[in-house]
Amino acid sequence: MKINRRGFMEKTVSLAASGLIAPSVLKASESFAKDDISLAQWALVDEIKAGKWKTLDFPRVAREDFGLNGIEFVNTLFEVPTESYLKQLKKNAEDQGVTMILIMVDAEGDGCMPTKEGRRQFDINHRKWIDAAQYLGCHAIRTNCRGPENVDKKEALKYATESYNMLLQYAVPAKIKVLIENHGGVSNDGDFMVSLMKSVNNPFFGTYPDWRKPAPDFDNYVYLQKTLPYAAGMSYRNQPTEELTAKMIKLCQDSGYHGWYGIESSGRDEIKKGKELLNKYLLGK
Image 1 (cartoon, rainbow, N blue to C red):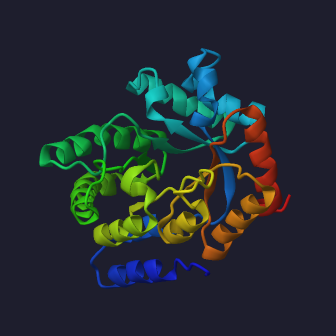
Image 2: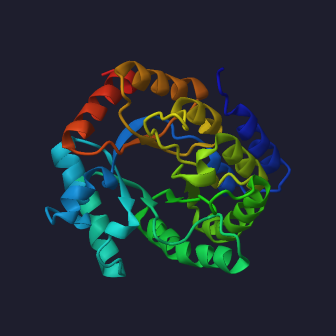
């Protein structure tokens, strides 16, 4: 089955033509013109926790140690995200010629909270990271949407739709996309994610597929297949075999996806392996 992003894009174009959305919103829905490789900060979280380097050093690490053009942050690894701190981080990235892509947001609540208070708090908690992403020049933040254990999917869809509609009221004027990574719960259900994307129906809202290894209860290839039409980034991980890695990359190419592939495979050796595989099968180097 070949996925095509065309239906999603045609709908956006139609809305723009009718004047229901602004041209700036339409621009946010467009794919990047090319593919490139970035480094997800979580891939080296053990080094950071061991005090070997800090987030301010991340642009240098990505450029000098791995020769990569982009970086993807984790909010819990920011030391003190004050204006002066973010200004220095921005300068460090500019000095290294590294693009800051997104901020992965953890520990700020879940996008599928069962109470109105919880959903409102999720909205409030994520706004500061939208501000930080905008200041740094990132294009998106990544959120979590698990829901309560054994939640009814119809109820979960209502909860998540309300949460993300609230947050997008803040994100859209800032031109920051709000993405969901499959980190368990309802976000692991590709059909649920498609339903949520259609329910919210906003070009600033999308998926950020995590290429976790396949498991008895999770087929990462099928998940990627279903969520690709809404993807605005890739959380790339080396697969158990090179053949499966190549197959997943080809799936992305066939779908029309273009953009960043953020390597999140753990440790320096796996990062270097991921870069080699992406160069081989994605960039043809």
